[in-house]
Amino acid sequence: MPALVAAVAKNGKIVGGGAVGLRALGYNVPATVEDRVHIGSDGKAMTSLIAAILVEQGVLRWESTIGEILGERVPGMNPKLAAVQLKQLLSHTSGIPTDTPEMIDIYFNTNAFDYNSSALRLMALDAWKHNAPVIPEGSAFQYSNFGYMTAGAMIEEVTGKPWEPLIREHIYEPLGLKSAGLGATATPGLVDALVGHLAKPDGTVEARLWGTGADMPSLLGPAGTVHMSILDFARWASWVAGKARRGPALVKPSTLDYLLTEKVRTPSRPNPPPGTPAEGGYAFGWSLEKFGWADKELVTHNGSNGMNLAKILVDVENDLAVVVAVNIGGRKADLAAGKVMGLLYTRFR
Image (cartoon, rainbow, N blue to C red; front, side):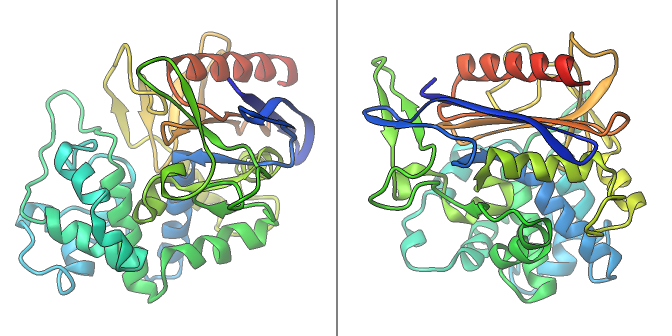
């Protein structure tokens, strides 16, 4: 790992934090707890929270369907796809699969150079609209970035605003997450953040400093292109650990509780892709998992764009949150970050 950063928040205060390693291999710049780091799919919980805010306002319903909200913008949608509800998208139970080769081709289409992200999300849905969602046997759970991208498009349609300013308006600014942003972490031309690293098949590791190769395409923002410092990540986690009873009042406590409540049991997968849950339950942008070092299931999530990996853990009963991030992806990074998360939880609970 080029660098590892972590922080702990308890009872609304950050009680521990640290950084080791380098912002980027080949650059002798030490990592710090103030550095921006990519948290990837851990941002799905933020998209879910934006949806919850709109549900409280009466602008959306958990039962709102893709067809109801986006049918006029994307005509000719498969009826089964059009019938998918917002709550199914946010719980990965829509029948929309994990990234398929067809979806990958859609994400990385050269149209990205000609349109804004909001338009690209609608174009992506239009390109996939003839497919019918399929619920697998045993469990309805299928981790779906495409589903979250679609939820983001629904949010944009009912608000008339792009998702990107909405996450700033509803989450970054009220929580005071001053380091929070979207996309690649570093300023072009500077190594002023933890940059991602790509492990190549030949065993070499390349620092992905800036540009399009430093993160996933922007249309996947609602699924996970969020970055922020590990301290701001802990502040977000602490707000969740406080059950929305500690300001700011983004949603009612009962609404946050609903977001954290299990909607589906996930199938057991011995070697899931780094950043996705191995087993447990799934809520709206949150997993519920049992770890060997804890006596109960805990609220958690993983995020990875293949070049970074971040973990968040929330214990609402003890008002405790732990966040860990590394600036490289892969199985070993996942195991190492998980080890650190367990050690910190055990020390501070």
